[in-house]
Image (cartoon, rainbow, N blue to C red; front, side):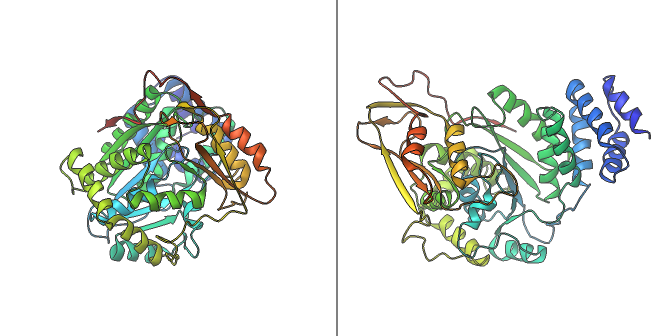
Length: 434
């Protein structure tokens, strides 16, 4: 069909047929539709919206526009986990080995960081020798043998998404819920998992700014998963403050090891338990959330989760000699800042701290930027914690060229201490969407 007809139908608020959506995506990916026509179509979707059925068809068409990973040779229910991105979000490095230790296969393909949110692939690459790129057969074989493999995406997963995302960024259509949902879910479906658990974040340090928008996005993605035959659940979590206490690549690996050793922070472990429980439920290892959470706690206490993480690292060529002996993080400069006031932590601006860490080299402003794996920020206090004058607030890990005093002053400005406790303490996990 003519692309103009598809544009006009959506412009006029009509429901697009599956054939219209499939043809448009196939023709655009093949270069038979011009960018200006695709831009007009995206704006029509932005203004008119899409039904769940339309969004599902768009997701499937995008998933089929590139490589499809076949995990059928791996026994069991393969479960994938995806986060919409946040500050100090180390959950994949913790929850994936825990779930794998419970017998749920995890074949996880993760992206690299861009901007102030970190990428799992970059964190893993801070481990000496760790191979983040594996041939597909080696990747599949490792999941069969070890129960887990953590790699970066190779090939061309959801090729149409890459093209459309660049266009959305240039045409002010990024914030469309159907377009966000199809972008995320097309990559998850193409990655081959049997079931999907989503961590949908909201707040200052997240893409979705309000809980209501996060719920709307989560509901659509859960619906897409169900209509596509992939059981999907979503956990709604707050990014009103950093999730964990480490912002930086090696620092977050250190935090993951601490968490798997039973020393994880309050906010981080609440999300780990919530996501882990849902992954165990869809993986048919737990009957309900209470049992799933108990299993996650037991896997930490027994050391089985940490053992599985070490097994995964070794299988991918990484060194584990440092685990249990010393931190992975070794920076050229280290500076610890203390609190000048006593009271309670009532605000930690995670986005601002993430941007400071990015400037230090922990993140990328552009895709081609190099990462400094050892730099970042380690917090000693979480949101709502009490603090005394002279207590350590955070440590900066920097390069030789960093002005540590200036960076520390900037970071301290984004950690607010008040005399009174916050009247309302927002929970880090607010809802589960089934």
